[in-house]
Amino acid sequence: MSGIYLDYQSASPVDPRVARFAQRYLTEEFGNPSSLHSAGLRARAALEEARSRVAELINAEDPSSIIFTGSATESNNLAIRGTAIRNAGKGKKVLTSAIEHISVHNPMKELQKGGFEMSMVPVDSSGLVDLGELERMVSPETTVTSIMYANNEIGTIQPANEISDVVHEKGMYLHMDASAAAGRIPVDVQRDGIDLLTLSSNELYGPQGAAALYVKKGVRLQTVNPGGGQERGLRSGTENIFAIAGMGEAARLARGEMDGESARLRSIRDRLIDEILMVEESYLTGDRTRRLPHHASFRFSRIEGESILLTLDAMFDIQVATGSACSSRTLEPSHCLLAIGLKHEEAHGSMVMTLGRYNTEDQVPVIAEAVKKTVGRLRELSPL
Ligand code: PMP
Image (cartoon, rainbow, N blue to C red; front, side):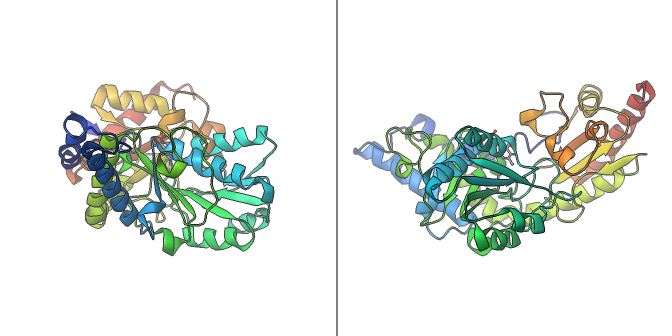
């Protein structure tokens, strides 16, 4: 890829080692893991190997607690609707935070149509969940509370362990969406006290088309797409062995390389933040220290994020995001930025840079200069 790609949160390249490892499952080892013949058994072995590698990445107590799905969206749906519906006899309340990804908010809104009550815990100006409010809002009827491990738009890392303590005082299950966090910071489901956890393959430099849901032993969960009964009956459908094997290999590599790579990215990122904040009327969004190591997010007054994105791309071949890729095609301001207290016009000026494997220190001055020129030019044109 030419230019400077700074949108790893939306899509990441597959690690060439992962591609080499998984390719055989496209062309040679194409058996169905449910088949009883030798080709099927080899596919089954690849599936179970991947399960073990993903379990190790998050310190799951047993590989059987990992359920493979097709996307983080699907994992979130299974976690939320699967527990809420299965445990409706105990209560019909579901709880989340105001800054979750829409793949958490929308399944809960769907549940509301079936008589469930959905509530949202507020966050502070840096995106941290208000623990006092969480404590007040969780009740014995709250079957599932879903709070993301770290936010994809503003990079803020939640205090998982404290959230777990509060949720488990009165409520039932804690689900955490760790799509943005896993492979970048240590996620440990046992240490953190998590019942269900979402992971995404592509965020680990694995192929698209695979994701996982960790389900702690004893969690009562039902499927939301019945069929052939694969994945312990929780996620029917023939397994995408290529993508799953790739996810397993990506998880293995991430576990070994995370510390070094995150330290490298944190150092580049910190320099980038310092340089960009020299632009007049620019502000960091999210927390400065409790932040994912690859994540830098800003807002600029009097200009639109979309104009920044398009100008940086067209004039400087630099690719950034304005918020979540999933909602970037609407011109509505991000619900996440509104939840941290920004006004509509402030939320419109957002720019998100997420670094990854192919970013280097020497790109920092180039990026900073391009942002400075872009913002200056757009402000000259701005009627505001
Ligand atoms: N959760 C988070 C935190 C995300 O950033 C995303 C998007 N990458 C998703 C869930 C949904 O992922 P997908 O579109 O791959 O299902």
